Image (cartoon, rainbow, N blue to C red; front, side, top):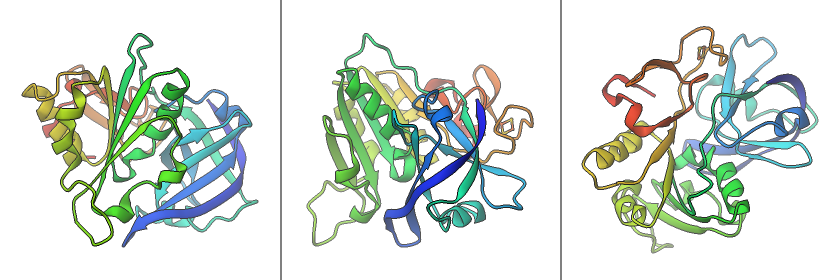
Length: 265
Ligand code: FES
C-alpha cells in the first residue's frame, strides 16, 4: 500500500443515462499500478479541504503505471468534485487496498456479471483473465442502452452480452434484468464474478440458494467507507464468518458468506 500524489492524465464523461453520468479518470501512479490486483481499490481525497477519502475500484492498470477509475459523478459531493478535476492536477491517493478477486487458474470459463456502474472492478478482471487465456463472457445490464459500457472501451477477446430494462427504437437488445439471463449463462461457467446494485446481488444470492445458479460466485461490494484502512469499522457487515470489514476483509466476498438481510450497500 502506498500514499502518493498522482498526476491526473485525463478525466472525461464516457457514457451515462440522465442523472447518472459515468466518468473515466486516468492517473499516473506507477507504485500503485505495479501492485494493484483486480478487485482492489484506492482511497482518493476528493477536495483540498475534504477529510474523508472516497473508495474507487481499480478499473484498469497499465504496465506504464497508469490507473483508470470509473465513477458516477452523481454519487455524492466527493465524486462531483472529482468530475471537475482537470488533466495535470494532482490527486492524493492511497492504494491498492482490500482483497481482490480469487482467480482459480484451473478454471477456464469465466462469467462476469455487471449491473450499471458495477462494471468498474470487472473490467480489470476481464483483462487479466483474457491474458491468462480464459474464455470470458461479460453479461452486463442497465436501465437502457445509454447506461451500458461502451463497446469500444472493452478489451477484445470476450463475448459481450447486453441486457436492458427499457426498450427504445434504436436497439433490439434483450429486455429484462441481468439476473433473468444469468442461470442460462452460468451453466457453461466455472467461476462467476459479479458487481452491481444490492438488488441484483441479492437476486443472484437467491439463485444460488435455490440452485438456479450452481457455480461459485464472488461479489465485489461497494459501500460507504470512512478510513478504508480497516481501523474505523465503519464499513462492517454481517457475514457467516462474523462481522467483517468490507475495506479490509473484502471488498470481494463469496456470495454465500453474506447475510443480505443485514447488509445495506
Ligand atoms: S472504512 Fe474504516 S474499517 Fe472499513
